Image (cartoon, rainbow, N blue to C red):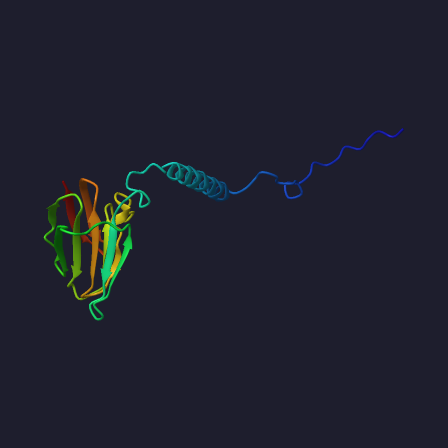
Length: 174
């Protein structure tokens, strides 16, 4: 038998580099995993909040929009008896909502009229999530149009123009 010949050590270029990734790839992998885990936790947490007292399914709110050119009013929401209903008008101009703070009785209707010269919105606080009182997310309306909402639940509700968050107001329902 011949003695075994010693083998020359393999050069680093011929060794397989399993698990040897550049640092930036590891950072990218961990960031992606973290974002996915955060997204799942956030999604699962929000899906458990079905008992939200401000859910649009449990509200007795009416929302209506008036088109100034046709005078036609579109109403959505639950039908309530609106006889002898208090109405409060809020005007949105270039300088903001006027009056900025209002106090109304339970069951009163607030009517927002756009006189700003541009398309604007009425959305619930906090900007930009609009989650504090979802029925108050009335959406956009053009110059001359009006939006309204009947407030059936006592509380204090902040709102703002999503397109210009410096324009905001508060409705207090007693």
